[in-house]
Length: 248
Image (tube, rainbow, N blue to C red; front, side, top):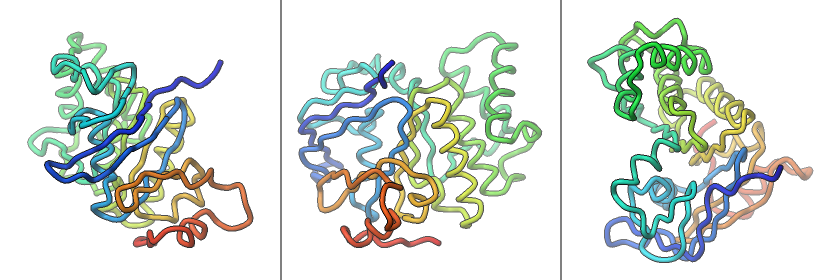
């Protein structure tokens, strides 16, 4: 069975308020892919991700995501689109006044779950996936940054999304913890969930091969599949673009 087409952008212009940040975007993403979105701060990476879950409206072009036409999507349909997408933010955005379990239950109830037994089972399931099943009783401030980000990934998995969008997920973490998080996301992709990760850290692309898409000067370009030549992928990117590795 062929891979399912999840995202198709044709000649899409993306604006951040009045500013055109990405022009004439051509993009296709299929099920089970691991996609790196590389670019400097302010290059449009976050804007592209936000457009995928309709946080930023599509100004022009053809944009289809998970069988929704983003040019004509009704506001009442947006929550259903977002239930199919897991979002991992750099700054965690956990509710600080409640436990890990309560954070996750809040999201499930907000997205239509009602049966307490099913809710408890799903929370246990996603916490096990991220290696945090003994931490459900903890408050966010009792967890390290890496542990909090694992909870954020668990939260993104709650509704069994077809696609996870991770926006600089390792930006606030030390290199060792960051590597653990990227490995976790990579293994989630192996189960069939598509992952699109925005980053400016070139070291990940050598360890965890995937598609490489760059945001440079308002243009989206695909560089190559990683891991297919003698040079490291990060060397190739550094040579062909002005993206500099900022983390080690």
